[in-house]
Image 1 (spheres, rainbow over the protein chains, first blue to last red):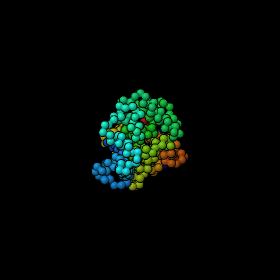
Image 2 (cartoon, rainbow over the protein chains, first blue to last red; image 1 turned 180 degrees about the horizontal axis):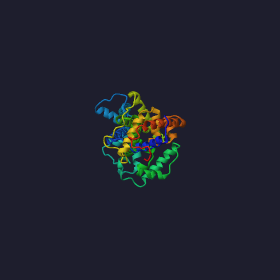
Image 3 (cartoon, each protein chain N blue to C red; image 1 turned 90 degrees about the vertical axis):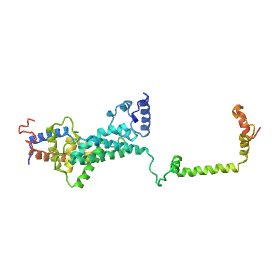
Image 4 (cartoon, each protein chain N blue to C red; image 1 turned 30 degrees about the vertical axis):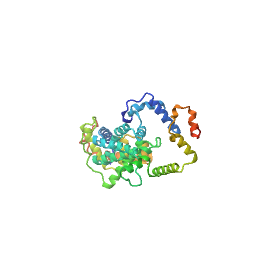
Length: 125
Length: 232
């Protein structure tokens, strides 16, 4: 079947008509697409899911706030170290504790010459 | 901008440009002139790729602008490849979903966003056609919510419907090439990039496709309002 110039001219005209009447998305489709975009955008801001199963309750929330179970382990270690230092204190620390907290007539450090605080810490009078 | 914040100081665009420029220099990209920053106030002037970067950085307005700009083009393309409005809507939503997902990884300057989107759309349509094993032969039905453009008269719609029916009888590759060229109005090099073939192959597909369409439609020329005088 040979094509004629008339047929191709008509085809060009039909193309033009089809360009003026494209299939268009309805408002509900546009809303769904936008909802997908915003949902994924919010998802990117959420923390990524953990490999361990979530434990419901305040303990899990506390653990997550601190930064996870490994961080809690570190916190526990630091707490234990603090208790150990308090129980079996190194020598200098006893004097500092005495000076800061033990004396009945407490000296308000803020009223003194700034240099005095260093002398108290060193164990001097 | 984020949340429609009205209280940006007038120094904010310059600061943002400075930070952006520093980031681009660090990534060894071309630093854009300050005039590009003024487009922050009018997202309609920004290129698609820039809007996508904004979207990936959390800008909700960019999501709206991209949807308004790109969804109609995807819908039109999918509708013409599939011949079914319902299928085209599903493909459109899926193609845009893939765009949202790839946004954080999009590297400006590597590929044109529209090229990528046309390719994704066509692949999704091909998958659907393979599963359905054929294209619906009836013309694309009228949009339910009257979404046709104001310039589309009744005769335009009838002619578009006839064209869709004729397109359905082409091979998938001829149909894609003809639609990209004469309905999406892309240049042959971009069509070649989308279809991942040579420009010569594109021209051949288009020529063969148009011959088949012209022959198909000539049988309906009276019905479509064309006389033998070609006075239209």
